[in-house]
Length: 128
Image 1 (spheres, rainbow, N blue to C red):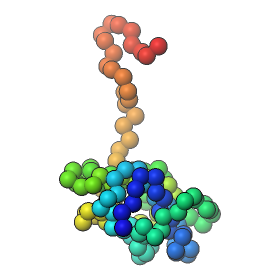
Image 2: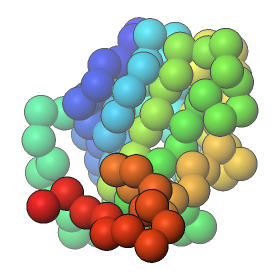
Image 3: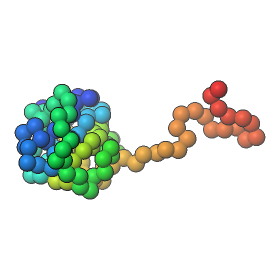
Protein backbone atom coordinates (compact mmCIF):
# COMPACT_ATOMS: atom_id res chain seq x y z
CA UNK A 1 0.00 0.00 0.00
CA UNK A 2 1.47 3.35 -1.02
CA UNK A 3 1.92 6.19 1.44
CA UNK A 4 1.99 9.89 0.67
CA UNK A 5 3.72 13.00 1.91
CA UNK A 6 2.48 13.98 5.35
CA UNK A 7 1.39 10.48 6.45
CA UNK A 8 2.51 9.42 9.93
CA UNK A 9 3.10 5.73 10.71
CA UNK A 10 2.72 4.89 14.40
CA UNK A 11 3.85 1.49 15.65
CA UNK A 12 1.68 1.93 18.77
CA UNK A 13 -1.50 1.82 16.64
CA UNK A 14 -1.40 -1.97 16.26
CA UNK A 15 1.48 -2.92 18.58
CA UNK A 16 1.12 -1.09 21.93
CA UNK A 17 3.93 -3.11 23.61
CA UNK A 18 6.55 -2.13 21.03
CA UNK A 19 9.24 0.58 21.03
CA UNK A 20 6.71 2.97 19.49
CA UNK A 21 8.46 3.94 16.26
CA UNK A 22 6.95 7.10 14.81
CA UNK A 23 7.77 7.86 11.15
CA UNK A 24 6.64 10.81 9.02
CA UNK A 25 6.64 10.56 5.22
CA UNK A 26 8.46 13.60 3.84
CA UNK A 27 8.43 12.72 0.10
CA UNK A 28 7.79 9.88 -2.36
CA UNK A 29 6.17 6.68 -1.17
CA UNK A 30 4.55 5.25 -4.32
CA UNK A 31 6.62 2.06 -3.99
CA UNK A 32 6.34 1.79 -0.18
CA UNK A 33 6.00 -1.77 1.10
CA UNK A 34 6.62 -1.80 4.88
CA UNK A 35 8.74 -0.75 7.85
CA UNK A 36 10.16 -3.53 10.00
CA UNK A 37 10.61 -2.61 13.66
CA UNK A 38 10.56 -4.84 16.77
CA UNK A 39 9.79 -7.74 14.38
CA UNK A 40 6.49 -6.03 13.45
CA UNK A 41 5.55 -4.94 9.94
CA UNK A 42 4.23 -1.39 9.69
CA UNK A 43 2.17 -0.77 6.55
CA UNK A 44 -0.44 1.69 5.36
CA UNK A 45 -2.72 0.27 8.08
CA UNK A 46 -0.54 2.03 10.66
CA UNK A 47 -1.15 5.55 9.31
CA UNK A 48 -2.58 7.85 11.99
CA UNK A 49 -4.14 11.30 11.67
CA UNK A 50 -2.37 12.64 14.76
CA UNK A 51 0.17 11.52 17.35
CA UNK A 52 -1.67 10.18 20.37
CA UNK A 53 0.96 9.73 23.07
CA UNK A 54 4.69 10.08 23.42
CA UNK A 55 4.88 8.13 26.68
CA UNK A 56 6.55 4.73 26.51
CA UNK A 57 8.41 5.25 23.24
CA UNK A 58 11.92 3.79 23.36
CA UNK A 59 14.70 5.39 21.34
CA UNK A 60 17.53 3.37 19.89
CA UNK A 61 20.44 3.96 17.49
CA UNK A 62 18.29 6.15 15.27
CA UNK A 63 18.54 9.76 16.35
CA UNK A 64 15.24 11.63 16.54
CA UNK A 65 14.60 13.87 13.51
CA UNK A 66 16.99 11.89 11.31
CA UNK A 67 15.97 11.66 7.65
CA UNK A 68 16.30 8.39 5.71
CA UNK A 69 16.44 9.06 1.98
CA UNK A 70 15.91 6.31 -0.61
CA UNK A 71 17.34 8.49 -3.41
CA UNK A 72 20.69 8.61 -1.60
CA UNK A 73 21.28 4.92 -2.32
CA UNK A 74 18.87 4.22 -5.19
CA UNK A 75 18.54 7.15 -7.65
CA UNK A 76 16.02 5.22 -9.81
CA UNK A 77 13.54 4.76 -6.93
CA UNK A 78 10.28 6.52 -6.05
CA UNK A 79 12.26 8.80 -3.74
CA UNK A 80 10.82 7.82 -0.37
CA UNK A 81 12.11 10.17 2.30
CA UNK A 82 11.07 9.67 5.92
CA UNK A 83 11.81 11.39 9.21
CA UNK A 84 12.10 9.38 12.41
CA UNK A 85 10.04 11.37 14.91
CA UNK A 86 10.29 9.15 18.02
CA UNK A 87 10.96 5.61 19.20
CA UNK A 88 13.00 3.31 17.00
CA UNK A 89 14.84 1.05 19.45
CA UNK A 90 13.79 -2.01 17.42
CA UNK A 91 14.18 -0.46 13.95
CA UNK A 92 15.53 -2.85 11.31
CA UNK A 93 14.65 -1.57 7.81
CA UNK A 94 12.20 0.08 5.45
CA UNK A 95 11.26 -1.78 2.27
CA UNK A 96 10.32 0.39 -0.70
CA UNK A 97 10.50 -0.26 -4.47
CA UNK A 98 12.19 -3.59 -3.68
CA UNK A 99 15.02 -1.76 -1.87
CA UNK A 100 16.02 -1.99 1.78
CA UNK A 101 16.66 1.25 3.67
CA UNK A 102 18.68 0.97 6.87
CA UNK A 103 20.89 3.38 8.79
CA UNK A 104 23.09 3.68 5.68
CA UNK A 105 20.35 5.78 4.04
CA UNK A 106 20.73 8.50 6.68
CA UNK A 107 20.88 11.88 5.07
CA UNK A 108 23.42 14.29 6.47
CA UNK A 109 22.17 17.73 7.37
CA UNK A 110 24.16 20.39 5.57
CA UNK A 111 23.98 23.55 7.62
CA UNK A 112 26.36 25.43 5.37
CA UNK A 113 25.62 28.44 3.20
CA UNK A 114 21.93 27.63 2.69
CA UNK A 115 20.06 29.89 0.26
CA UNK A 116 21.58 32.78 -1.54
CA UNK A 117 24.76 33.29 -3.46
CA UNK A 118 28.39 33.13 -2.55
CA UNK A 119 29.74 36.44 -1.27
CA UNK A 120 31.68 38.56 -3.74
CA UNK A 121 35.32 39.07 -2.74
CA UNK A 122 35.67 42.40 -0.97
CA UNK A 123 32.01 43.28 -1.38
CA UNK A 124 29.05 43.22 0.93
CA UNK A 125 26.71 40.28 0.90
CA UNK A 126 23.19 39.84 2.15
CA UNK A 127 19.52 39.96 1.33
CA UNK A 128 18.55 43.26 2.98
